[in-house]
Length: 392
Image 1: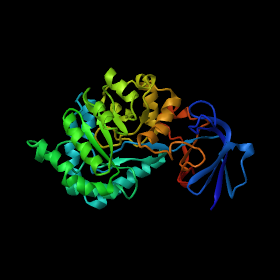
Image 2: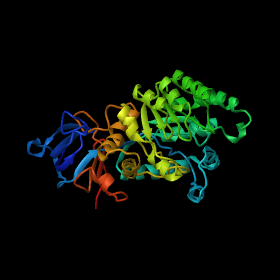
Image 3: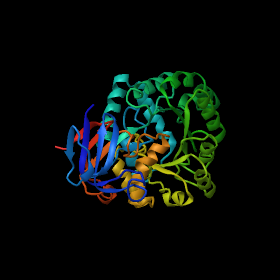
Image 4: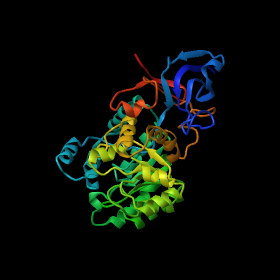
């Protein structure tokens, strides 16, 4: 098996305090070695072992590949007109999802897969090496199941989100739709899903419905995550903590009790700054969450309606500017924080035994991810030890 050394790394983020300085485990003038899919050595360049191949990074910074723990990539069409209306003063409501449902239902499998591949390529180019994606734009048994089957070819982090909103054909019978989601639809989707999710918020599902949906999914072996408190304060965070969900996502409107619950639980608060940017909603105060002891992740929430971005660096910059994270905290949240939101221990860090998911930057420090917003800083990406982008 070929061994590869990355040498002359100006600044290396390991996310291991035992290896370097601070929570990021920062090392200067560093090197790392990977063999196959995993890292086998980390330390000073001067002490790097002999390897089959050496790549001199000439002082560039290296960070763990970003972990995008919340995305909606299985859809057809786009909603730019809706975005323009919001920017002109319109209000974001969950009901806009229905327009994407119509387009997704009419799309072929090939069209859905092509769109997914296009977006995944964008994710990789922004430095994202692990991503989660959901169903939720089909809302029929057939369409939800086919979305997950397609997604499962590209990522193990697939989420059944039949409980995104109640489709129009069940507008007068939301209870009947919950029965479908927890019955035949779940049966069809579970084989290609790892997670189950529910949008517990205004215009979607209430606390009791969310509990029923999550319990049914867990009974089928799926792990829980929750869309919580995006549109208003409500039961979403409490339901997520009660159900031991891996993450409560959005967390735009939080009460003091919500923050206390998250801080005392295993549930990660996953913040989605692209959604606040694209809907002109208030940004959650991540400082309050961190000061209380909660674990915070950052994800893109890539979707055609409320956060059509695949750029984790953009989300890092927003989190620093508008959510009061420090640049170090934002990078940690986009790497190891995302890993914890997926309950993964093999990613989000650059330590011996971890996956060789690596992002080399055209910058001397990880600080440039927030310092230079909107600039493509990707030099090279390795995913499981394989190069996915090499600068020209």
